[in-house]
Length: 342
View: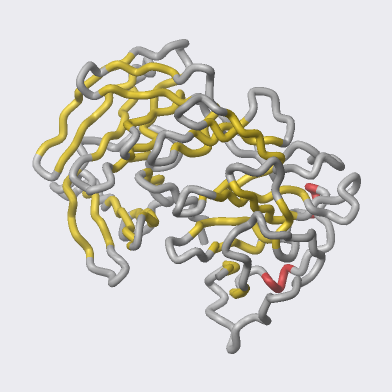
């Protein structure tokens, strides 16, 4: 089953199925899933639909896209928080970014921005109360690895002028919060992440353990709905010079380092509005130097309590720390692979 990486206002559509592709997006006190219908070549309704699905399963059609967005997979659409408008990019053969602004009643190209270097284009990234953001998306990428993720320089987009301006100093973006705070990777990886406030203040949080073969690596950063904390996965293997096991780590955005959380081999997936974190159990392949990992836990559901504020003491753990509960019984549907943290 596909893994969902949720970012408010951004919808990275899942791989297409026989019925279409969809994306769930947590925001505020509700959940919405945005689904784009993919119709066959013989269907006259070939323009993809954009739909919102609320927590009750009610589907509402927002509108239609004028074309398939460009980018890895089926594409990316950035949706305004009130669901009234959305933007996406269609890149041509020269990687000129044709930026579409859409609403329930219209879809139009409002800007065509040439590629800045001949191998990147501007892809929609985020639309929140602090503005519209795009990233400078590279092409022709490949590779694989336990911590491999692709993140790109952040830019601002002005829909009134059609101008795209790269953020300065550069931000290899993970997330932009509603108040304009940027979560950025370091230009030279050193195991830390930047929290850059609108005032210009920068706080550095050490996520990686600084030991072993993946000393500076981390992945899957998720931000709490109240915008005060982050959680990520790093290498927490017992012998990191020889093996690799995922370990979750959590920190306040004002902290200087992250604290280990929960058992090994879980990777954070989504931070829900009610405070729970959904995480996937992942055993690495042996050829990637995997440490001991119970593959039988793949496809199981766990439920545990953590302090409401992560600046309370949290010690690194090997098994379940004090306060954790055993897995719910009976065992859930094995098609669901997640760790729920209350």
